[in-house]
Amino acid sequence: MNHLHVAIIMDGNGRWAEERGWPRTRGHRAGADAVLRTVEACPALGINTLTLYAFSSDNWRRPPEEVGVLMALFRTFLNSEIESCRREGVRMSIIGRRDRLTPALVQVIEHAEEATSDGETLQLRIAVDYSSRDAIAGAAALHSALPEGGTPSRERFRELLERTQHGDPGTPDVDLLIRTGREQRLSDFLLWECAYAELIFSGVLWPDFTGAHLAEAVDVFRTRDRRFGALPNVAARESRASCDIHL
Ligand code: IPE
Ligand code: IPE
Ligand code: MG
Image (tube, rainbow, N blue to C red; front, side):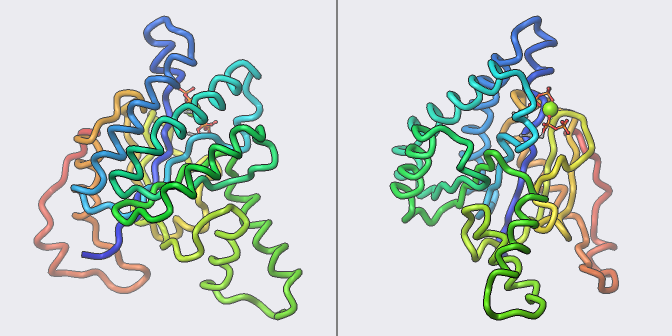
């Protein structure tokens, strides 16, 4: 089967907590459990690469207390998952800027990446201090500083893009983008990489997301006729069952 890259905008933690009369940060803690459930479900669903949006560069605009809790959660999460990721063959990489993270967090990130670098079951990418527009602008700046000149091919630009965000240069484009939490927007996530991604917007708030929701999203994805600008695949369209989304 082909490589499958799923990306998720994990939205709705704050509202999940507020609906229960709890502080927003409790939603972020519950969101970390949903991450574990999601990662565990990936291999059986044929997902090879999973990119999770954990903290956008615009999320620095939130109150410092909330940002502090999120940063502490990333650190605890990475530290506590290194061993199980290594055991399960999950290769972790953190994409985004690192110069605004604390040295302690950067150290854990580097350790997590190094310790899990042999993993072949799943490539788990977590986007922290990530902005797609900044990454694209960074790749353009990187290219203009190179001696080769000219306009880069799409493939070459893609490599530069990964380089500006600490990504793996061979990462394929996103096939399926899921956003939980009712909003229907991209919020500066993987704009280049999602050029032909199938989009699924789910009403489920992220802390409620389960492996079953992910399985349903992959099922829906598999019914989509991806044309990439060519003509429809008539056979696929005719065999496609009508598809209700319960997500
Ligand atoms: C997503 O949940 C997590 C982050 C953006 C860090 P939110 O915190 O955005 O939750 P809502 O959208 O306010 O419910
Ligand atoms: C996007 O969610 C970022 C993450 C899920 C990490 P936001 O909650 O920050 O997005 P907006 O502000 O609703 O667009
Ligand atoms: Mg949100």
